Image 1 (tube, one colour):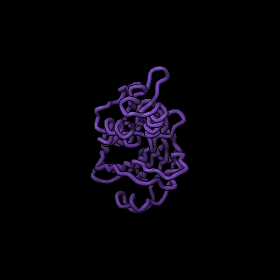
Image 2 (cartoon, rainbow, N blue to C red; image 1 turned 135 degrees about the vertical axis):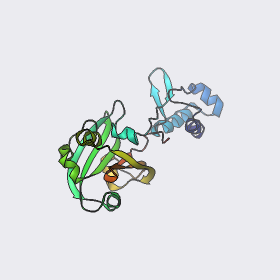
Image 3 (cartoon, rainbow, N blue to C red; image 1 turned 90 degrees about the vertical axis):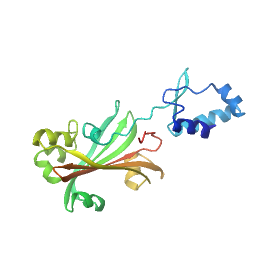
Image 4 (cartoon, one colour; image 1 turned 120 degrees about the vertical axis):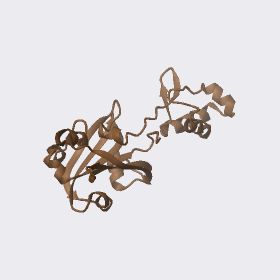
Length: 218
């Protein structure tokens, strides 16, 4: 039952907001006991595919699209989400970052995105240090309204664009688990973006999405 409903959600024949049939109907359709139906629904809930509404039933959960490309420069949160800045510090660029931005010192900004008490995403950016001359806020663990890229464009007159983005999956690292509040390894979706101004890479970003948070990769 869980596999069947999961497949329908992934194909789009069950859409966000659609209501699942009552327990009795699911029992008859799949020849299951009521306890088995409850367990199947619990599996789907744990995967973030469905939600319960008291007195109304079980509904297909919303699957927000990843905020990527030019949209990400305008803001990195969905409605109801909050940015929690953890740190901003100057560090040596990690190897994969240096491949894009060059070796040397960069500003590493670390934050999480939450809805209520739930951590939805662990986000980091590595920004070229000379951007701080225009946007000194990047050296402080505080928000840039709406993003450092947008503030840089407004103040310098130099447009920031997204040269590329990649979406992949990996098993959580120790840093991922600490940021997302996980105690065990899990598979997570990872998105990386490369930010360019005047044909020069000025920053890269990485967002790690918590397991169980369904997102529409398209």
